[in-house]
Image 1 (cartoon, one colour):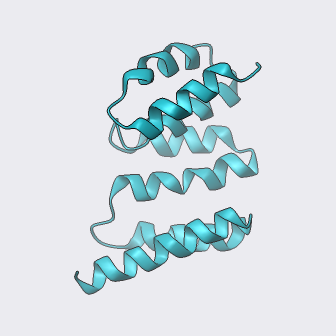
Image 2 (spheres, helix red, strand yellow):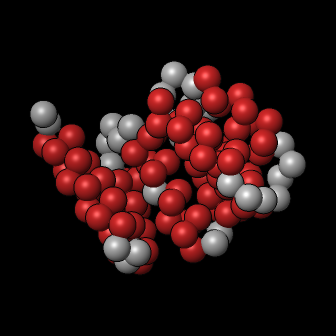
Length: 116
């Protein structure tokens, strides 16, 4: 593991912990540091979208996700679409029920079963 990878791993872990305890300012601090780093996987960056969602800034979450590769974090994209009231969220969620990532499948199953 290179030093950049080790730093990115530490920052990603710290960001995740901050999100879990709802210290969104600290989480955002780590997210911005990650965004400045080299060779950060898009899925790691997409996890920072949780910060926008938890703050209720769904449009910012969707805009950031639109700048990432299409399959970086499809579950977050559908969640943001639903929270924004986009009528296409349900179609996209159904499409993801057969996604190769079981966690995405499970998230969409839960989302589709949730009351509107």
